[in-house]
Length: 310
Image (tube, rainbow, N blue to C red):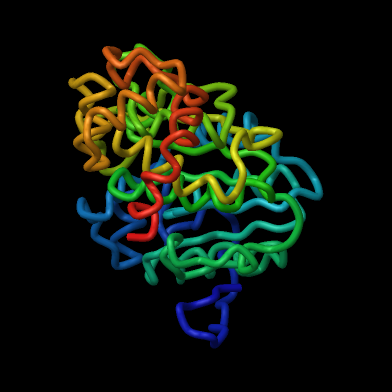
């Protein structure tokens, strides 16, 4: 089934004879350019459209996602359906494909429409509501466009309690930032936010040649599971985010100076907060872990209230 942006349900054409797509549809893994032309799609750089065409990588993603019979799986950006094939072979109960491009969504419907387990949302993932993805605990897989990957990860944080495991592919630089630890060159606010919501239990690199068109950089797959318990209360989240954003607003400066500039507070207020949180004011933000920044956010909560309301 394919669900368009509006409320109506589009009809689904008869499925292709097999998942190889035959000459009529092109063969995505061997002839991705032809398959895209037949679908009327010109890969868009602005959307970060680099399609996975290596079946071995798709098989590895499904393996580490531990997709099994009875699972409910969401695939973000299925594109040509290389990964979808492997997901279905694992025998899940339901597979929800979220594809922004209407032409690709229509091709996916032609290709997989005969399988009652498959539903397709022709929608921007950032506009999808959690109930649209099905019931039960979800396994999330997908190749995230580099330009909106961080926003998509933030969206998934809101659904953490209903997610069992995520296996997501990012541009290599973004993946490395997500899993970076304090003190690392690429440790950032994204690293902190990710660590507060998720445990990254594994990762592997995917060469640029596994995609069409071939990107200039490699990709990285992260295997993530939700933390068993959040380390902050729901009412604290906005204050934690405001503090972390301010801390990394000037990462080359000391934590005292970056917070003062990021929050618009005088240095005396910041120094008092750092002392209360037992943090050395001369440290740079990249030396602080998520729990230290959480402690600081709690001390600064009265001062960040106005920023959270903005």
